[in-house]
Image (tube, rainbow, N blue to C red; front, side, top):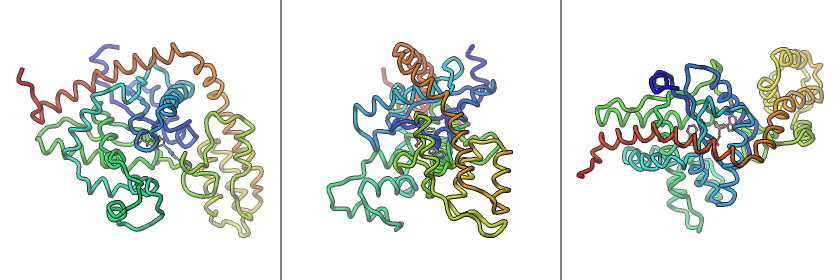
Amino acid sequence: MTQSVNNEKEIVLSGIRATGNLHIGNYFGALGKFVRMQEDPNYENLFFIADLHALTTAPDPEALHANVRNIVVEYLAAGIDPEKSTIFVQSDVPEVSELYLLLNMHVGIGELMRTASFKDKARKALGIHSDSDDIEREIIGNESNKRVNAGLLTYPTLMAVDILIQKARKVPVGKDQEQHLELTRRFARRFNSFYGVDLFPEPYNFDFGGKPVKVPGLDGSGKMGKSEGNCIYLIDDEKTLRKKVMRAVTDQGPTEPNSEPTQPIANLFSLLELASTPEVVEHFRNAYADCSIRYGDLKKQLADDLVALTTPIRERIEAISADDAYIARVLRQGAEKARERAARTLAEAREIMGIRKFY
Ligand code: TYM
């Protein structure tokens, strides 16, 4: 592919933290979209594994290294094709770390502290449960020996840099990442206007015309997430997957026609919408509306459709995971490509900011 063709394409970039195996929340919120986007010739795609971001919450060296590898394998197994997309590891692009330092000079600690994900993770780090808005007092006043590391606070700067250093305009992510994208746009605008330049384009989420996805857990509560312990993983075998789905929380069933589903049932419908055909969803919605629904049937259908989605991925995971040389080749090639544009953007940012050499 020639340089000039590359330049005309719109850049797509997204990443997943190396904190464990991928679950269907990651799949429907992100990975599944990556695979579809790479088929569109208008896009140049970069997909990476965010190992530096993982350090903010999971600093175990052996686990981190293994997780990075697992996610590369899962990317490939899900259908990301290294001939069509650039696959790389975040830390293989050291330019990101330098721009992160530079951009931090234009980011306020107040705006970082107000980020929902920061408040959430800071409270987890301190082991406190509170809904108060006074996160600052909770952190500064905390006298336990637990701490909130500074990397957690500046997490959105690093994420913004991942995106801005590649000048990406489309960032396929789940709903939970929208606030980070909002901050990225704000940082881009601020930098451009402070220096009177047009260096960074503003990036937006991308969802094939639909709204951003939030995949719920099967426990009747909020979103599916690794730290929530309510995940269906892409590597779950059929038996495990079916067991998890059949155990999903439900209620007594609708007693009046056309009633609003309770949260656990709404969650099951959300999953069905992602995994099944519109006809299947319609069938169960009608059955709910006329009170004839049997949750066991719905769960069985959902499990069938999830098994059909994950089984081929799981089989490919096994094959790809055995091939060290292939993984190394993909990542070396990906790092080279990702560094090219990153180095150009970093050089521009340094020049703009007055970080210039005397020799
Ligand atoms: P992470 O690792 O938390 O999540 C990876 C992707 O999976 C999506 N996701 C979900 N989507 C819908 N429903 C769910 N239950 C669910 N759980 C996870 C997330 O929205 C995300 O798209 N900050 C990012 C990693 C990152 C990044 C970036 C992403 C670092 N730099 C630059 C895009 C661009 C994160 O925490 O991902």
